[in-house]
Image (cartoon, rainbow, N blue to C red):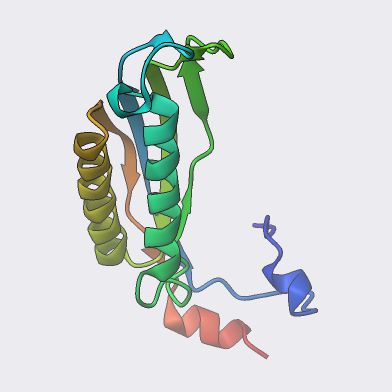
Length: 155
């Protein structure tokens, strides 16, 4: 498997030995608010799904960056899709959805992070008075490499 990230290049290494294939969870998040005219709905009465989603996405990023031992266990979280409706410059968005891809070579850590992310998303939705539905689209366990095999490949 050829590395698809920048790690080996940043270390000026031509090859690396894989210790594990990360487990993966994919979530699909739908946020429902209320559309309205941008010029007539007061700020404190808005149920803006872009504002709620932006806070949610930032929370996901922070959770993954700040989680203990995240770097050592290759914990990464990515929002790769984001859609908003109706998508007009003068309309407060009433619906948005986004994907979340969470990967980690430690399954227990990944599952804990998934749970914490879901709690965080629901808390933000409640605070911003929007509805939030979270669906797990995919979940796969990590696969650890054999220590005997990886040790035999190390120089």
